[in-house]
Image (cartoon, rainbow, N blue to C red):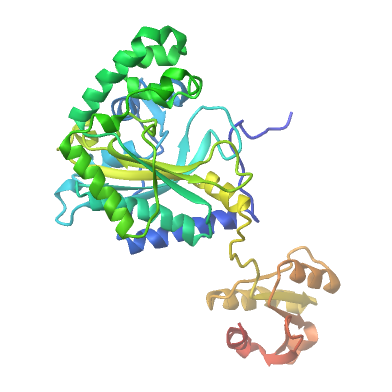
Amino acid sequence: MGYQIPRGTQDILPGTVEKWQYVEKKAREICSRYNYKEIRTPIFEHTELFLRSVGDTTDIVQKEMYTFTDRGERSLTLRPEGTASTVRSYVENKLFGLPQQPTKLYYIGPMFRYERPQAGRYRQFVQFGIEAMGSDDPSIDAEVMALAMDVYKELGLKRLRLVLNTLGDKESRKAHRDALVAHFEPRIDEFCHDCQNRLQTNPLRILDCKKDRDHDLMKTAPSIHDYLNDESRNYFETVKSTLTAMGIDYVIDPTLVRGLDYYNHTAFEIMSDAEGFGAITTLSGGGRYNGLAEEIGGPATPGIGFAMSLERLLLALDAEGVKLPIEDSLDCYLVVMGESAKEKAPSILYQLRKAGLKADKDYMDKKMKAQFKAADRTNAKIVAVLGDDELANGVISVKEMESGNQTEVKLEEVTQYILNQI
């Protein structure tokens, strides 16, 4: 019986992986411009970290985490998202003590959630995310959203929609929470089991329910905007005015709550409006999480971030017909005939590569015609032909494939010659 890939995972093969590399490179370039530094955290963490940070009432914790017990009887979990690990590292390594604040970090790596696989949604998926910790300036909220939008726009996406909301501060959220409980409680038995469990623990999550989103009580649920205190209202107004000053369009959605317990104040999602993208239009999301560092044992630290799925980003590029400018070609393909030439070829190839050229040759003992076909398949810009006669004369035949020009070059000069032609 042959082995098959686990459900909800994928092999990213040559021909496709170059798209991933291009997207990741673009994300890193933009982070550098915004002065965000890369952080790499473990793929698994102590389970308690996610229970405390993500929230034990969330779908992620209740239904989706890959949790196991190691040989030391410790409960560990494959990370389902990147913020908790990043904040844990920030606290554990005392990055709050660095003189340059806020601490601005980004990550790119695999995450794991046990959910129903569908287009652009896998059980192992890759997230790119940023976290800015240490500042409660509303302008950094706008900066985080601007960075996310820049990634999408500079990759060529146009059908984008930034959806914005505020969840208010602790005081505002409590007042809104009490209003939600009073609103839903008399008819909570009409809602799904998850919503019934969330009524007292986290009623805000009822607004995010997919099963009951068409219930009439959803349409009349109290809005957080009616319960914002002056501080929360002023904060949100500053975020909006900063986005406007930056020329970034947005729409307000009072029902946007996000799926994690640690969010407060700003919450946002970026949607794709591309035709044929699918029913799930969210590309990325994030928000402010003041209080998360304290929750896992650190000092009081405001923070904000976002995470985007690279799988969904690539789907959006396909939906809009965006072709990434990926060059898939060799600088030189070395065609070799004759025993003496075969012995010499590896050293020539090595010198080409040392000079920074992308070069290759046949390793299957093919005939000359088949080697030229192989060169065509690699889109080689130059084909260099070395036979025993050329080797005896100390030369190599070099052909520029685009122009068809062909010339003989001294062996010791071939590397520099090709460099000059590329």
